[in-house]
Length: 353
Ligand code: PHE
Image 1 (cartoon, rainbow, N blue to C red):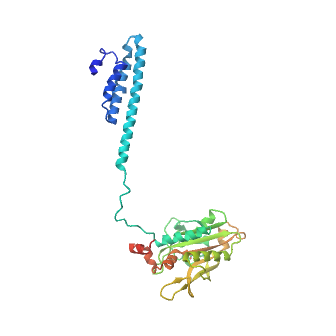
Image 2: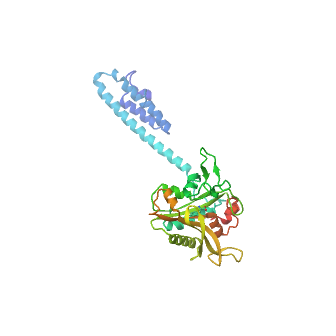
């Protein structure tokens, strides 16, 4: 058939001839590859359309213009037809691929074991929620802290026992000035240095001390509470802790006892004991006549404010530090601190949330 339509040797294929050849071949297209093959055969560098236009010069001048225009028109038609076909194959391919890759989410899962939230994470969340509702924002600092933020800026002098090797993990560094933070209080310094008063935040996180027995773990968790504004006094501290303890232990009006204490960065300082009942083998919070130590707190020492460029005549505040594991042990009846970090899945299954 191709042969029959051919014009004499060397004379270019006419638009009609090209179109007839193309239409015949187009019938048999089955794939993207076929489309490309046809494109090369007609529109490529030595394709039929291109060849035809190249040999235009061999025609008599009076035919050239019309012949050329017709071939060009066919070129446009073929281009369009092939492009449409290409798009058609492409979308078909995509649909097939999507269909193949679809996942049947209605198939029931088998043997799924649900993980549980560790009591430490759970208690951090509970404490965060309570303080958030009292207007405290969230703050944090690094676990590897410099000596200045962990000690000096907090008024812990060179000779303070807290600096001794047996308490602090020192880290070898160029200036030997890095430690694993021994408490969350350095977040006070970082936050004050990076902002302007008022400040009202809680900062939960990991802390480290070189100590390990039934009631001490070398890694444990604290929550720092911090509030600095004009005219903040100890009554605010007391009200804030009362609200927190009542809500955390779900008992209203837990009796608190502020026992005079000492922290270099608070003045006055206190340790807070809460009412509990020890008769009957287990500890019940908010009942009975016994007391149990629960946290350390105090009014921020003016020197700490001044160390961070805050006028202590104008501003005052309170801070407190609570041990998370201790809260968890008391609220959820966990007896041995070491269980928290042994990674025994049975512990998580029993005490997890
Ligand atoms: N940082 C103290 C500690 O780890 C606790 C504390 C925090 C006390 C804030 C007073 C105020 O023992």
